[in-house]
Length: 139
Image (cartoon, rainbow, N blue to C red; front, side, top):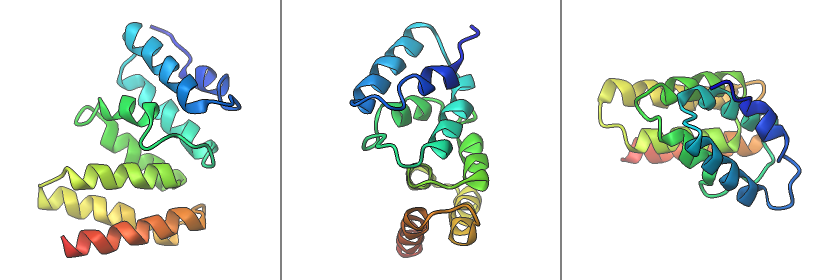
């Protein structure tokens, strides 16, 4: 399958109902058998469009989370190193909440902590990372 995920997303970025449009797009991808190869372009889209309301968590997040333990976590960490956004910080926290291995938790907490001093992180991403770090220390 040679689907251009980035092009699909660019086609709906300005849609009045982005969440609805992204849900329909995800349904098409599932029907077409699109897999983990879509994760990286989706995360890059989130980086480029940090102010889009993706939902809570929304169809795109649900789609990429299908690839938990199949490369999604590594792609997410790379995304956060490139440009943290509120959506990707929140996604990392969801991964952290589901992780029981202490070495892996420690690694994820380090990535979350790196957001605080990241030169491309906006204030919303920093505030969210700080809040999640505080929670991770008390749990």
